[in-house]
Length: 89
Length: 379
Image (cartoon, rainbow over all chains, first blue to last red; front, side, top):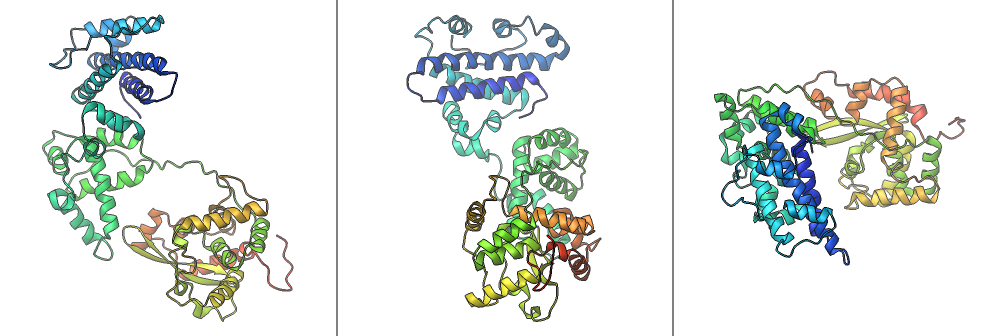
């Protein structure tokens, strides 16, 4: 797996791990897996949005990288969610 | 989502309203569409095989579409796309025999299809886009080749597709990605031990292959007549064997076996009463030869997992031929490496059978496993 956009790679990586945790079927660890999967799902969304911001403005987004959190990228007005893509919460 | 993460990070409970299944479905659909729209990236292509199925369930794609992505590409390509038909027509004309084998056409089509899937365009669209200047294959091709193991095969096939349609690609010829081989060379002493332990049938192929260096799969394709048994009565050091390789066409070439291998083969053929059309070691599955080889190596205590295999014979042969001064191109050619096989077809630098015979004669003292009777040889 190789991406010119490093944040996109991170998003796919998080998604892969989330899927892996989500589909695992081990007894006595369901709750832990659910927590883990949700964290990784969040990370995946966060990074794919960051990847878009990076694509739009490479230098600017590198400078801001430290300050950008999950909420910030969700609220970034350069990204518009289409119909049916509104987050579940 | 933000709340969910904070809760979980602080070891709080996840609220019941947040169903991870529902969230996962939303996430997969969202990431799938977002990546396609914004990065022209198909997520499923990036997932390991074991996760593709769950991905298809969550995104409601069918497995066939998701894994093969054949929705927009019609098979066979040669019948549905004029550019592919033209490409194959030119390849057919240029081939030495005037036809392409079915296996080769399937390989060409399948590699081109994978690139089409990667670029998200049909073969005709690839060429039309490049001609009108709206699409350049170079960036995509470079990315496409990054994680491919057989880079050269993909590169040659895609390049030839563009060239046949009157275009060129700018991506430079990629370097070979040689994987570090863990195979260990087998010494002559070990080889002799192994032959002494093996029965006649096993000894015959091991000895013969210590001169030919073929893969076990190719060994099984040999027939008795390929060994030119009619020449075996003449006392010589090395005897020719005809090998047939199927690459884009069928290529015949000659290699040699030593006198000790010939003796073992002769006894084996006579004992089994094989006719000229029989395949002497064809058990139906090459794994069986490998299994016998492994078992015998274990019995005599030379087995090393992942390091000793029939390939160890090829390593030994390669070293001895090199030390005996055989030209590098000839050695590559003997081991069936593609560029040299192509050269043979165009008659450039191809060694004559006689030249190979002389080179083998030179290497024979080191190659032979058993010395002649009354001969003192230090191994």
